[in-house]
Image 1 (spheres, rainbow, N blue to C red):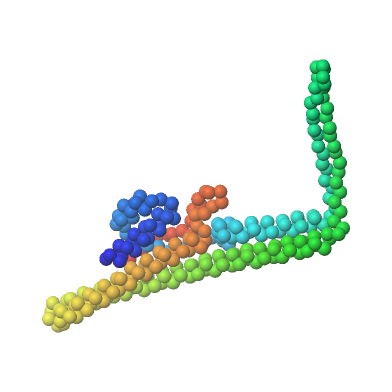
Image 2: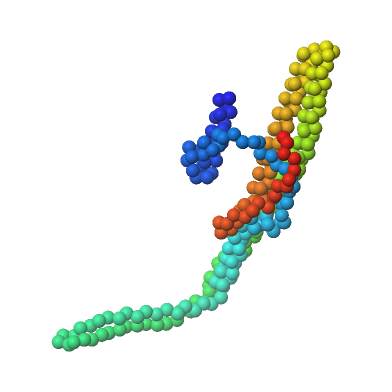
Length: 253
């Protein structure tokens, strides 16, 4: 029990850190008893475009790619002649001796022409560097998209397989309970020993523990699915509804 209590407090502190709150403000709420989270099947994972819009890591990679692509145009623009217009005005107040007022203003204005004649090789190399950076950014963006798709597919597969496991374990629990009833009736009739009844009870407990662990794993995999699809995230700080929904289903665990 002390080990379980330690793990609980470590998890509570981690939740408080994620929320940016002191752990004491969450401890009372987290210590309240609650039913085991149960995922009830029915997956709507959305379309690939939703994944690209919702995943922050993909959006970052996409913006980096856009910036790297724009740098190509900046580097190419340095290959062409450029004209810069510059000038200055310097007003100066002069008070002549015995006079009531006076003034003097100096100014200058002129264009500057830049011809990249001798720097052409360096500037063309800068263009090649910008193109190389853009290709690298594209590969990073592509890898982010493929990784996101892989995570979603893995989470979907895990949730579906977990549902099959839970159904099989529910059938096993039902079978062991029936076996326990038969062993109890046989013991009351004197046809079997108490050891048979205890063994049947042990099988029921093991089956129920396995079912509870499978239900917990399915809930965890469902959370992983929502993380993989970027559920709840929206640009601009708004919160979207989770793309993967929970449909009605059996509530027994």
